[in-house]
Image (cartoon, rainbow, N blue to C red):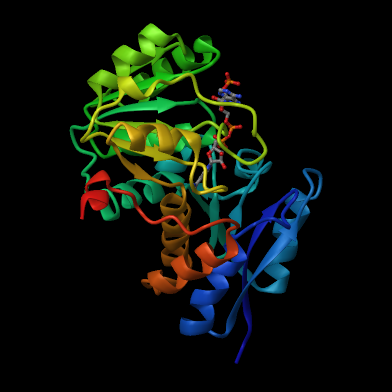
Length: 297
Ligand code: NAP
């Protein structure tokens, strides 16, 4: 059996959870494949791609700090990845490296599967303007979201981002906000979904909180934290206390991996096997989706 390789490149890469998730699925379904983590420096990026062809690496994920820099070395880039401005999945197709971005798809699938929410027509507040926020804002726009409000600690970045999105995606209304309490309170009252796309809440940010108040939220809204380590964050706690449904970042992480697997192998992976491997590789207690009504049962 000819061995084939998949992988993930980044620097550092030791912390990546993707090998756990993908190898669990590959062992079950495609044992001739192995998924490996590769630490690649900025200077080594182009050479790594040449080496991959020689070594039988047929697809890989891309993580920090290479998601933007990799684009210059690819032969084809999908429209989604171009709009987002970053690539997180690469596949060798007829000798050509094709770059995709599955982060936004991962977010949408998570919203549909766990949240039961269709993006078309929905109103969303996104906190943050980094790579994760871009993926979510683009994919929601492509899926026909009605209104997307982007709030950022440095509001000028939100202005630039919202203008850029509006110029590229015309069917959705994009606007920008600062982190001022009055603006945030008014925006939260207007939307159905609130997304934390900043790193606040990660274990590396122990002292920080988003400038939000529970009384701005209401039952029936959905709060999504893209942070997945830890799975349960102060943001989710605050929104959960106000009666919102809460979704952790694990769903997006899982489904961006599912979408990458589909691209590489052209088949549906065993999603529950991937989910279990992912959850087992995360530290801390397992958090399933939380619905306030569950507490009453
Ligand atoms: P990033 O590019 O570093 O995000 C930067 C954004 O966060 C900027 O808008 C920045 O605001 C804001 N920010 C940073 N520190 C802040 C603070 N102390 N207070 C308020 N805002 C702050 O990161 P990213 O790649 O977009 O990722 C964001 C989060 O999403 C991370 O926790 C990452 O792990 C998570 N993520 C999850 C998935 C998933 O699959 N679940 C996928 C991708 C990312 P300024 O512009 O004002 O500095």
